[in-house]
Image (spheres, chains in turn yellow, orange):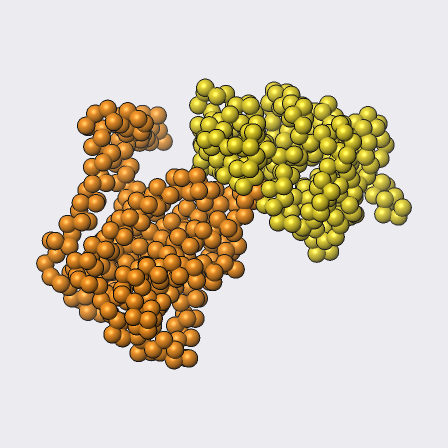
Length: 262
Length: 339
């Protein structure tokens, strides 16, 4: 960890009509680290990812990626710069086989420039590169799985396919929207080493999660959100022992009152 | 409950020859080679000898009209099935291509084949530019917008009395000969048909299909969906403009009727009957519908009644489309199995 922030989020606010989904959220992500974002349902985690990656326009605030202002840029330009995301509800191309799903990101300008994940600036045959990426992410190469239609793949593989789509762009940072949710215990157990390996390969990860135990295992830092605001930030131990976080998760009415009048 | 009837179901399996001829092994025997090539050859050869067996000049003209509708239908099928945009813009493409070609031929004196080529490209560019702001629209909204443009342009020409007004532009050059006319049209249709079939299976075609499947994931992959939609709309409108340009030289006249609704609706009917998503199906649909429509002229006003009955019959009895049905029978066999 070199300590320079690769992603700076400054006072990002998003209001849907009168509902403030994000209220002046600020945080920084250092290069090479895994940052976790947790919070109860409806606390604005996915909205935050949508704002950073340009999928929805933020009302105010600023996002800097490697020092460059990317606030409210079109989503495809942000992805082209190397800031990618996965979707909480998986979005594969259901009518295509798994490996053909990767032909599409490999067709993008960024993949052509970088040569895709592990590519040294030159992109080989897209089908082959796609299968290589799938193999690394846990699809058994010599089985039928990479050739199966995405519509017939189980959730575990679809979550991996989401990550593979990001990797095809040779990203610098991936914002993961709940990669662990919906997976069985054994699937999660095999996903954790994969996340660690991505970090070793130099990819910065921001992980929005509900599975706290697995997240705390991999995350260097954790940010807690509640009601669209940043509640606290710290190491996994600090967050786990924090009274504020416990109250936010178990949600007593007193806490709400305290928060509104504070 | 639990009778003999209910415990059986129909099972469909790929024929052995289909599986064998999927890969490189197709080159191993004549039987498998012909399994692959015969359907294509029947289509190509059959289409090419069609002008030779037509009984009269009138029916030769019908072939040219079939080709124009076929171009529109293939373009509709491509947009709807491989890009996810349902377009009612057939009349728009025909009108734009037709009027450009008419002006080029009438005012600048370009020969028909040159004016057709120019108006295909220029017309497609104009159509794409005009539709560019509507590309984020999906489903029925895009359809409505594409339906508006031809109405709008027809009224504009009528009200401002430009481009010949209600009389149209008369006295255009025809094709150099009727054989050239028919074979030019047929070769264009075959060229576009096999070209599009190839295109949708290239990597670019996969991206277009991905835009239909899941446009958010395409954006997340660092690609502008508007750009790829624009490319596809350019290709589709080029086919329509080509049809329109040929049409004005066949009739030697360009008028407001180029914006007629028939050009938007009949290709859709042909696609439904022929089988959507096959690209061959729409051509087959046109080969059936256009001649039927001509034959029914003998019934006068009742023509539309019979025409509608045939359409409803097809949709109720064979809603999947002839080509989808035919391909299934060709590639798979069915049998009853006990559950």
